[in-house]
Amino acid sequence: MINLESSLDLRKFDNSVMQGRLQEIFRGNIDLTKKLGELRQVTMHLLKPDRVGGNHYHKMKYEIIAHLTGNPIQVHLMNPQTKERFSTEVQRGYKFDLVPNIAHSLYCPEGKACLIEFTNLPFSEADLEKDLYRLNVFTLPQSQL
Image (cartoon, rainbow, N blue to C red; front, side):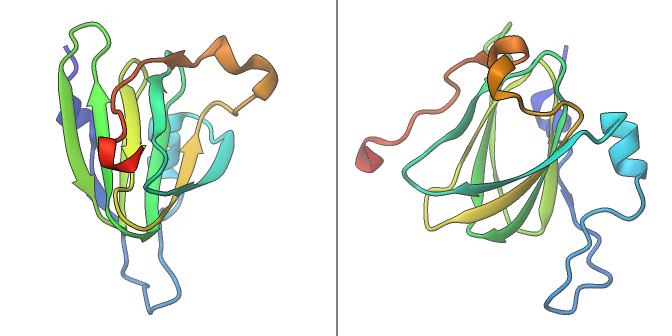
């Protein structure tokens, strides 16, 4: 059985070169290659309090998410088979994994947050349902509706 908390693999960026303008997310491609196999797409996400990102899972897609700027976000995970849940807060300067077969949602309750997603499968509007399975993991609080 998959442990939801350990599947997230929350880790801080290597900021040994950070001088106010530069944040090193990856050094070389070991993290990318080991987890993704092949980097196929890089996407930016802007989270705001009036929208929940995700609420789905993938059977093949593996995502590494880097929280670059903005306020803390909430990451909500759920195992679709067992309905087990795990939630945590992620600060900027951290990266985490969204693994196949675990449903996920991302939410920024205050202000905005900018995330970068690295993945092994590209997004395709024409083939949206090929590896995207909708599942409601998190719903906006009533005060945000």
